[in-house]
Image (cartoon, rainbow, N blue to C red; front, side, top):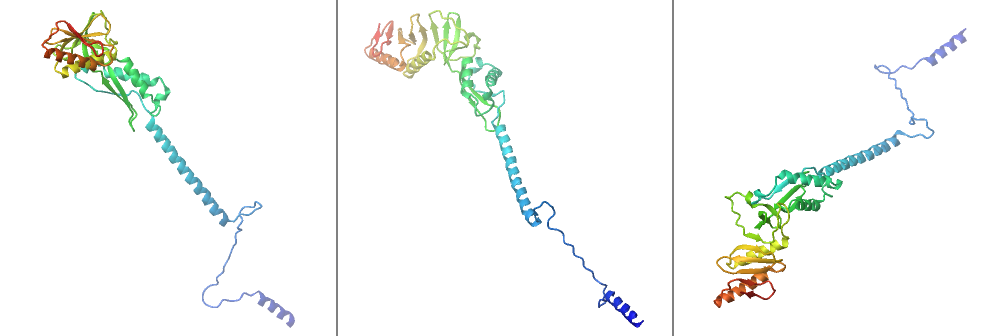
Length: 309
């Protein structure tokens, strides 16, 4: 009996937990260890390895997306700067007489818009055919001496600067009097000019029964330049021309001088009006010094020679 009790007592002593010294309650600690391999894919990948790679991947694409967005904004801005719109702006360089023969600005604006619309390449500043549009305006409207097109850096409407033709002289033709421009075109009829306005232009009388229409060419521009050069050279030496005549004979220009009984015959086909004017002035000076006064003409149509009567 004693042996059995003792054995039982030993068993209870084994299972009895040891008491903790001190006053505080017993402290228990638990530790759980997660698997470092979350996915069972055959090849494990630890978190410490995946995090740097993920950050690198995200940073790579964030940089690329920012670059792509910046590039897209740049392209959109560039397209917006280069695109042009119609109608263009017309800037007319007015002169005192241009109000009598220049058309309404809307007419030039519509013509320029039509020229721009004929080609797809005229929709942007790089391929806009500025020279072609300007030339078309000059050909269509003889009152235009020159047209230039300016493209603003940030604006969308081209600016067309129109220079009116300078007035050369008044042509007295078989069907009326017309004001001729620097390019030889009839700009407007003389009777349409208000009487109070004086253009201070010489009158050129045509004796070949030439009929003139407003807007059409009456003279080659080379002949207009010739006539203006002769007038300027004689005026510079104090010789005033009262009027000019175009005889029926081809290529002849007769100048009637104020206070003198004779005319001066010039050759319109000659390319050097100053030389002819200089020949006349030299002959006139010689005749004046010799007290000789022609009664009909001084002819300088032949280069280097002069005839008088």
